[in-house]
Structures are given as structure tokens and as C-alpha cells.
Image 1 (tube, rainbow, N blue to C red):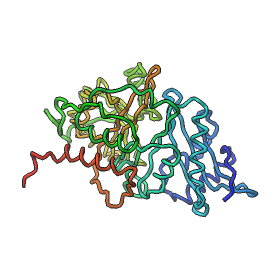
Image 2: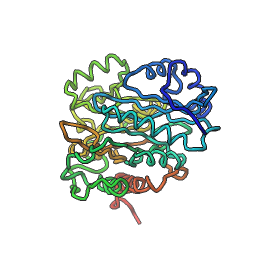
Image 3: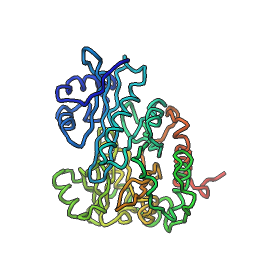
Image 4: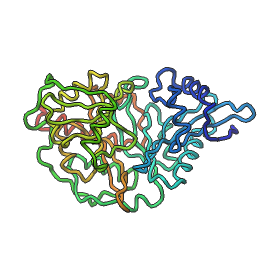
Length: 383
């Protein structure tokens, strides 16, 4: 099908909303496909790349795709890829993906673009890989769309970025399967990384706080942002691209403050930072998860440097599972540093209807190994 791919304009908002509705119905959880004010903001935002495919003659929209960017971190996110069912033959989804990513990277303002792909069918996984994305992980139960679904992480890099990665000498042993999967699927070398047993790693060591312990949630966005900047004046302590906190979770004694991006619509929560540090909340994971669940969320994830053995160990000890790896995610000077996504879900994990392609299969195997080691240690299995 012959189409013209052009930037979206404000006059497209109503038709774009109809396009997303026709494909996803009322279940699309991203504001860029449903909230007119947010759509207008993004279309006019200098740091957002929004392309649409127009049919010749009529100009009717056949597809849409967006790359949102975080200029400070030099990272973009591919979101909102949609093609009208009538026009799905002919590779339009791939053309849109290639055009928007090539254009965004050509500005020189980005080092990488990532995307999370629903694994309800294999097609989208192959589309992004054909456009230069590398598979990086699998996050089970990460989003509520048509039921509870898992997401696969992929990233595409600017030239020479991966050649300037800072090497990490060792990582906590539970991360070894994830690193092996990344090496197998993406060709990124981790053979020299040594797995080490970190003190206290295992399911909930030490005095665990009961799930019934009170946990307060502050959701006044402006206050949360001011407090966040007060507690983390150094940007190095608040690196979580394209996320900002909208809630603080804290026990009554105030021994820690967990800053989170809560999204009850998608049923997910990103833990952006913990003050004074991750270890301070490791023993209080159960009441924190209980409090988060009461907001309508049952999936929690966090992002940590691969080099942060202490932070990784704290979350591993609190029952988080290594889910995805983002090599060369953060630029510091002329070097790039790897990050890890760790997650925990309160729901039963069921992969029977998950369409995991061969591209992502090693990450599924790695997740299952890590989950088993965390929640079903061999010494607790009675034959």
C-alpha cells in the first residue's frame, strides 16, 4: 500500500483518537492514544517525534508511531505503534518504526531508543528486531491491557555506543542467567563478568516487617516532586528516564521514603528511588507491596546500575527477580553504563498464552531460573 509518512499535526488529534480506539477499544492504557490534551502537548513538543501514515488522496490516517525522549538522559522510547487493521499487509508497521527511529537518532540527541512489546503475538517482536532493536529481557505481568500481560524489552543504539560500555567485574550470582541470555541473543559480551554470592541474598533474610504494618502513601504530585528533588539533589541519584514520581511510600516511623511512579490504569509501579537507600526498605517489602496493591497495582519494578552490587543485593533479598538488562543505558562522560530491571508481581505468573519468540526465549528461561532460585530454593523442596 502506498502511503505518505509525515509528522503528526494538531488537526490529527481527533482522527488519531479514533484510530487507537478502532484498534484497541477502550483498553489502550497510554494517554497519547486517548487524552486529547496530552496528544496536543506531545505533537507540539520539540523533543517528541510523532509520525503518521496518510493514505494518498484522502489523507486518511492508516498508522501512527511516537518516539518520546528524555533529553537529559539522551534516551528515547518507542511507543504508540498502531496500524489500522485494513492496512496491516505490506509492512507498514515496520516502515513507521524505521522512519521514526532513524529520524530520532539522526538528530544526534539520543544514544539509544527502547521499547516494550506486548507478547500476545510474535509479530511485534520481529518488527522491532528487523529495525535494529536488540532483545533485552522479559517482564512478566508488567501491564494490564487485555488482562494481565507480560512485556519484552528491546533497545536500538546509536553508532559506537555499545563500543564504549564500562565493564563490570562482578555481579550478584542471581543475575548470571540474565547476562548469559543477553550474550546469546544480543551478542553483548559478559563472559568476563564474575558472579559472586552477595551477603544476605535470598528470600527475605532478617527481621521481615509484617504485611499488615501500616505504610503511608502521599500522592500530592507537586509535593512529591519537590520532596524528591530535596532528597536527591544530585541527578546521579535519580536516574529513571521518562519516569517521574507521583507518590511517596513511607512507614509511620519514616525510616525510608520510596519514590514511585504509580499507574493504576496499567496496574504497574516503578520504584524510582529510595531514601536513604535500597537497603533501608528491603526488610519492609511486604507492607510496601500491600500498600501498592491497594492502589490497584500488582506489578513493581526498579532500575539499578549493573555495578551497584549492594543495591541489587538488597532488592534480590526482598524478592525481586532480574527481568531485563539495558546495556549502555547511561552516559557518564564518554563511557556508558549498564542497568538492570528487577521486578516483582503479586499475581500468579502464567506463560501458557504468552507468545515468546525465539528472540526472547532465552530471557524467559533466565527469568524462570531466577524466580525458582528466589521462591523455590532446592533446600526447601521436600521429595
